[in-house]
Image 1 (cartoon, rainbow, N blue to C red):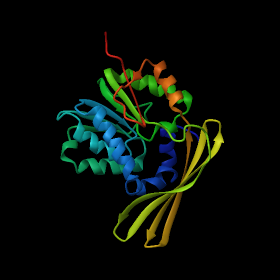
Image 2 (spheres, one colour):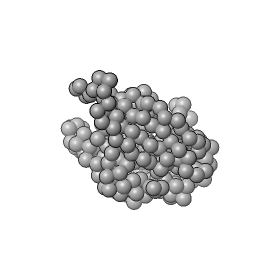
Image 3 (cartoon, rainbow, N blue to C red):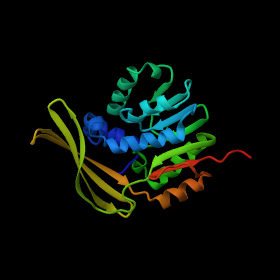
Image 4 (cartoon, rainbow, N blue to C red):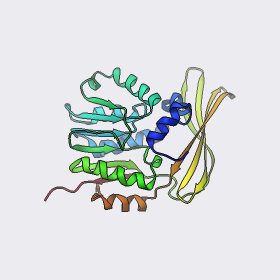
Amino acid sequence: MTGTAASEADRADQGLGYAVNGPYYDVIFPEPVRVSLTDALRRLVSGSRTVAEIGPGTGVFTEALLELLEPEGEIFAIEPTRIMRAALVTRLSRIPAAADRVTVLPEGALEAEVDIPLDAVVMFNMIMHFSPEQRARLWHKWAGALRPGGALIMESQYPQTAAAIPPSVVSGGTLGRYRYDTLARADVVDEDLIRWGMTYRTWRGDELIREETAGFDCHVISDETLAAELSAVGLERHPAAPEGIQAWRRPQAL
């Protein structure tokens, strides 16, 4: 089940992975995570002109980026998974500011092309789908797409080592008479791969009325590993990166 974001798109077309996750995505997305990542974007990309968002999913942060970029700023939203892209386009179609400013690309991160230099590349909740060999291509491609001073932005990965994660409940939101949460756990597959099992649960009061489970094989990437890989493509740490955020930038031209 190991693969890239593109193979996750293929799995979703088969009714697996994000095909199960997609209908719940917005309502189970943890609010503290949403707030902290939006705050990171506010610090790092406010006033930018051109941004690529890789793996935007349903557009949770695409909408935030629209508010942070300069008035004529442009976003390239790269989303290969059909079910997520459907939700993304639906969200964007209801935002007047998106009509002239957001281009949705259906290719994967290793195939998509952007024809102008970028101020930032945002990669939230997606790099775990790429093997070390694929990440080398990913970093080379998108570091090269940055203008001098441009930033590559992602969250620090969890866990930092391949370790089993016991089951825990992540609270979600409520829609009408139903509330939603996620039961998450992970098992070790090998020295740099874990398999997450995510069970999305629907409750009516204290009655569990539905649950669906999706599995995702995810590569473990420590901050130290990430630093070595990004330094190897010529990026340097961004001094304004908040805690828990990996932000690396292309050095300014001398």
